[in-house]
Length: 150
Image (cartoon, rainbow, N blue to C red; front, side, top):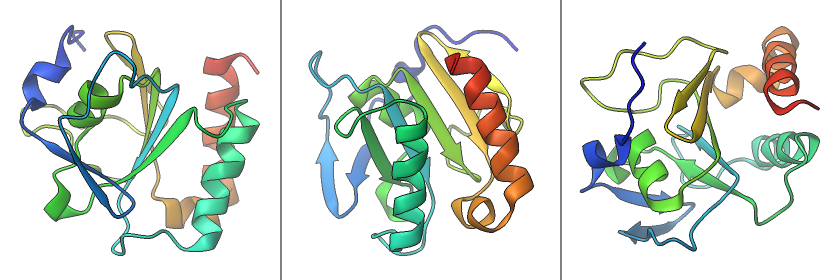
């Protein structure tokens, strides 16, 4: 797959939502995060068990609170991979399920690392499936240990 050197140019006019707060054009050099979780959940707020699972995953990957962000890609929010990358400059993005990326982009394979410039992107199963399927959770964890050297 060819490397996209400036994916942020593909998504310049998108808006973001973090839990229940809408953010437009928030990107600055200071908005750098180590990790972004991007998922779809029909409600704006994640259920406590799924939120706890993401917090534990971030901690297991040695990320501290404040070093990662959560994005719900509800259809009305236009949260995309490119908008997250442009506005928050994460070092790594974990996509849970079929998250909107770009209509001209080929779908990413599950549990396969991709590099877009300086950002590592990994697509995995939905949060709901990971919460109930230990084999899928183990596959993601083994990949994360490998790419993060933990």
